[in-house]
Amino acid sequence: MAEYPLEWSALPGDKPLYEVDVDLSGPIADYEAHLSVIREKAVPLLEELAALLAELVRRLDGLAAEEPLVALKALADLRYVIAQTGQDAAYELAARDVPIAVVATALGTSEATARSYLSDHHQPCPHHARHHVPFARRRRRLVPRWGPPSRPSGRRPQPTSPTGRG
Image 1: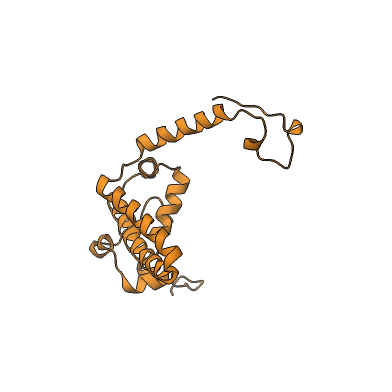
Image 2: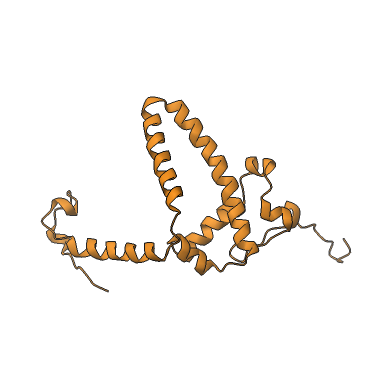
């Protein structure tokens, strides 16, 4: 691992490094090489999907300036689609018993970040939970290895008496 020491006391405190006479080409090149290694291991998006996402971003950017209410409505609808699809994908990964290391590599992120991402999608927000039961969950109850165990049917465990008879 390369090191790039800086004498911080010799640098002006009110300017960013790119405005000071500091050569950042080494750290930037190392960072870009690191990102390319991560990207190579990540699951590639289908070409058609990547083009569709690029077009969506372009259209939403234009709408944000021209028709901000339409842009916000589209984003609200996308949040719903993302929640549904994310939940379905998270449950499907759990059903397939995909290890968190594989998920992290495929997403191009750390195991902790992948676990958080999956957990976010595993526990839907209450509004979406009322309207949607994911495909994988309809087949059977799933408890993913990468998240905290969920309670069956969303019920709290019943308290027991000190004698253990209920």
